[in-house]
Image 1 (cartoon, helix red, strand yellow):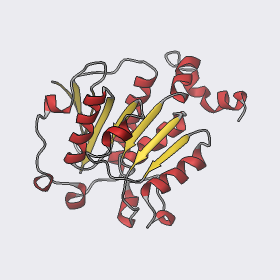
Image 2 (cartoon, rainbow, N blue to C red):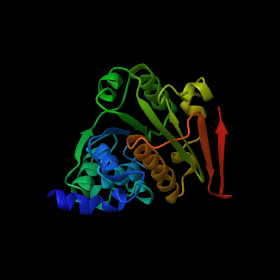
Image 3 (cartoon, rainbow, N blue to C red):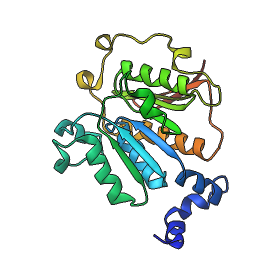
Image 4 (spheres, rainbow, N blue to C red):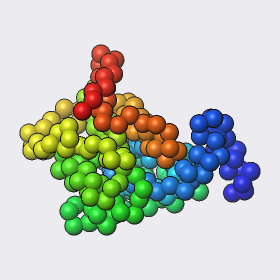
Length: 236
């Protein structure tokens, strides 16, 4: 792709005064890891690859299932039975050939977390269980990596930026994880398909703002209630 084509592709971002050419260069030179290629991971991967993030990794060990398709919008009926990261790679390659997409078909665990996360500038956590969320958080703290965090259930979601330039992390607001079996999840209570699109898009936007060195709110968590259409930000 020529430099002229690259400019055309990203012109609507470049035209934003706060982004410009320098901001687009930062986006194209960035390395972002998305934990999970499911409900939240799908819109995150979609918008970060569309924006031109140079190296985009996705870590997920699940296969695409039919019930995923109401919300995991980068996957299709033809993807059912395929590894989510392979389906995600196919999506990104069809959307933006400039992206170096790294498919990590592994479960993030204590043995591999540091090695995998250390290769990226920003970690975006779209995982669906607390054990992974806390492991990712603690690894980011250890490695001094910025973490963009989000979660969803039913009509509700939340997101925050953790561990950015010395800011607080997940344990500063929720010191200890609950037991996963005690926490309701999308498998048991469901999720309306557009909700992860909303929260995932917000997480992608926060990531792009961090890359382009635009201000983001720190030591705050945003609560999104789409049933009553209320948005609340809480300091911690």
